[in-house]
Amino acid sequence: MNPNLIPLHDLPIGCRAKVKKLTCSGVSRRRILDLGLIFDTTIESLSKSPFGDPIAYAIRGTVIALRLEETYKIFVESIE
Image (cartoon, rainbow, N blue to C red):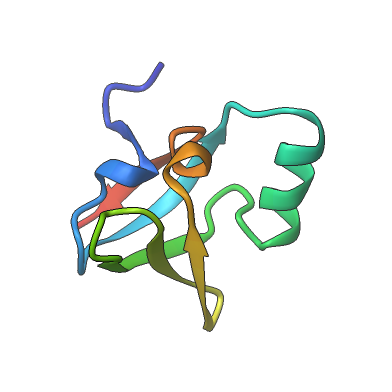
């Protein structure tokens, strides 16, 4: 695995990254792809809920909240 890849949940608030790898399969994978999280999509971490789950992300002009269990399966590369 590329050492520059981090799980989406590790992306700091206010930072942007590009989607590089999905490690899920089946219905879960289809849902993530349907949300627009395909290879090289830019994603920005916006805010965490008070308890840290879910986290809001800006994806393709919209805001989507993802639970931690989903973000562990999405690997991104930070954009400087």
